[in-house]
Image (cartoon, rainbow, N blue to C red):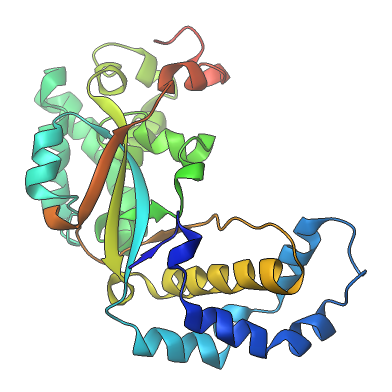
Length: 266
């Protein structure tokens, strides 16, 4: 298994290829042609490594290789996650509606208010059906857990579509009762899980291999430090046995309160 938190698990096959390609990389990015480490990384991105034959061949040969990644979310019942895993909507919008209605049960909304929220969310599901109803979004390493954009995934029950749905109705609705309950109930958590390359969206799996290549180019050829950080998406549910750990996000409310949207909120 490739654990993106642990560079010792990065494939030696990829490292060997990088060293074979040393002359190519040094020709593309001559030593002394940069002042800061990040300039090398940005130039490597511009080489479109993910499209190289090696990357495509590697992914074809390693479809069943597992990769450990992270997912921020707000959890009302941890036992339910451990029993059922992380479930997508399976591309079924009717099922998505059913799931959202279950999430908002504690709000005791009238039927009219429930329908108002569902109607506001529907365009999001319909516009990005693959991404919003069939995928579990993830990020690479635990160092990214406290990234403000990724922390937001754990801000409320129901996820970003519920949050955006409410914003479409009134951008201050999250501060109003009973909707505020979605931001108060439950615990903000990071879930680490494993998934095979074959069950990761195509561009996402290409970017994982690209990230490992860049890590080896930076460290082995240029002698520079590098940490892989990116996001991606699966094309499947995450079954319970593939969940590796569930950690509560520390200092969540304090960190959120740094931003205007959450000042005097909790």
